[in-house]
Image: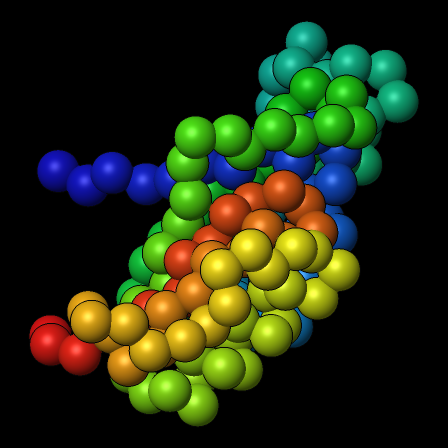
Length: 136
């Protein structure tokens, strides 16, 4: 059994996928637009080019994403994604990239449990914890 995150960007999914490709080196092995669905009832008028479902590969992890109901506003409250990296340089690079256009609210720093740890909300409202743990 696996648990996977599914992010609903409410009309900004394609922009988010491009951001994560640049910021994290994410790959998108699968993407289907509403207009490509075999079920014509799954597509609201005007949303044919919006993303119905996508799969994003970030390192060894898979995250699903879509445009959902295309309302334009996403709320990712009460949940965060953790990016566990293997070096302080990676932590610095990814934290900076994820913070671009967003809001870092715990600076990347050394802690008792990590050589680098920080928390930031990206420009889409997704909260990320970036960590290089001291013990693996």
